Image 1 (tube, rainbow, N blue to C red):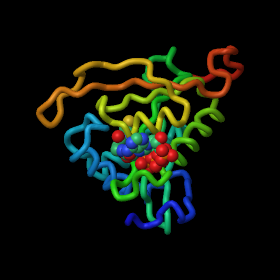
Image 2 (cartoon, rainbow, N blue to C red):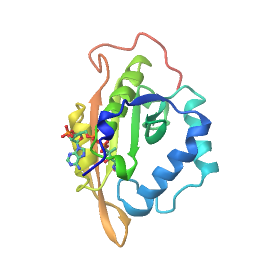
Image 3 (cartoon, rainbow, N blue to C red):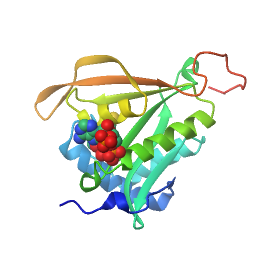
Length: 186
Ligand SMILES: CC(C)(COP(=O)(O)OP(=O)(O)OC[C@H]1O[C@@H](n2cnc3c(N)ncnc32)[C@H](O)[C@@H]1OP(=O)(O)O)[C@@H](O)C(=O)NCCC(=O)NCCS
């Protein structure tokens, strides 16, 4: 029987530099065994710390979820692309420790990430999901209102086989219904 992690209070908060070692360990395991990420060599702590700084420096959200004071997962939003016209669109990334999956942590993390991105004035959020068979990530994103907008067939090659990317998208706040009122710098 799975331990009742879901019964434990979840804490979702902004990641600090001290959390990045835990995030690195969680991510490294998924890179080594899964198709959710198209990285093949897990980034080390210095690289993960650099990525965290590059996102949070300009104010993008990078969150962790913990139970019993232990970091079980993380999620962040980066700009979808860096060219200036994409400046209202972000892309999410989310990873939960293998032993803590399917207990609501991903939903809580991604829900909070969506709220933060909305409050920051972003209008679209995109998920680029490794593997058409990644039912967990596709299901999680659908659960939070993302719609599947396309598939890039055989766009990756990992573990000796071709792998698709599933693209899912969700509006944030007013989405495209009104023009932005605040100027966002590219
Ligand atoms: C995707 C991931 C973050 C989901 O996190 P999680 O904590 O396990 O998800 P949750 O328990 O919050 O599930 C929320 C909803 O997502 C869907 N879901 C999650 N896991 C699922 C699975 N294995 N099969 C089908 N649906 C699933 C369900 O709708 C679920 O709601 P329900 O449990 O009420 O049915 C996690 O599985 C993970 O880290 N996967 C590997 C890395 C990865 O692929 N990350 C995404 C890269 S884009």
